[in-house]
Amino acid sequence: MVGHNGSQTNAQLRKDRKATGEITVGLIHNTDTTKKRFWGLFCLILRFGLGGIFVFASLDKILDPITFTDVVMNYKVLPNSVVPIFSVVLPWLEFITGMLLIIGYAVESASAVIALMLVAFIFGITVNLFRGVEMVCGCFGFFEGGQKIGWHTVLRDVAMLFCALILVIAYNPFASIEALFSKLRQGEVIGNEK
Image (cartoon, rainbow, N blue to C red; front, side):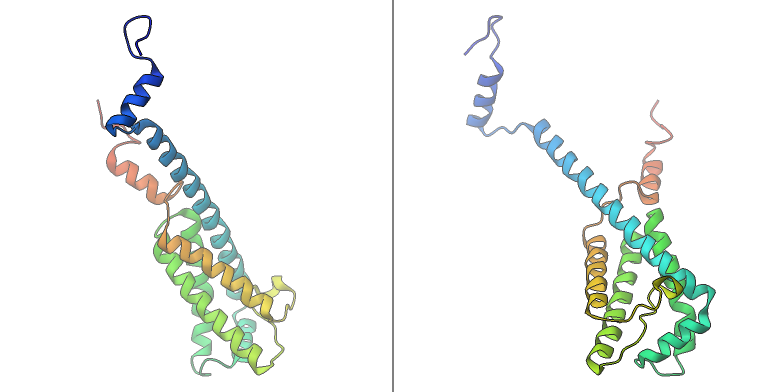
């Protein structure tokens, strides 16, 4: 079909493109861009949520390492000689990895470390649940108000593990320091093109 000025109508162009196998790239590009932006926003929410939780969880442990050492000792899953070192290193590891997620730098690596910590937490809690031990979690220090471990604690940690694994496997650097550095390297922010 030909339009009034001798050109094909949009409907005819679409029909011709389908017949020849030509794809409307703009439509697909827009859909892909929308999906990438949505996924990027989702990853940003995961980063801030998980990072914030780990920074928050580290604070009381950093400020009161003696109490945290007692909590770790009560789990009875580490040799007593390792507990003091673990009790000092773990909170700082939580703080650093949490901050890396929040600022968006080395996200996959930080998420992998968080995933490993969560596996260790799940193991320690599960072992003590099967032992029938009633004890304080120690997950959030003073802020948790003496919350006891339970299957809800395991489920919470499994949910956080799932979030960490998403960031390890399918991370999108939307609104991150990594994305900013990438744009700076490509000259998009400064504008090397003249």
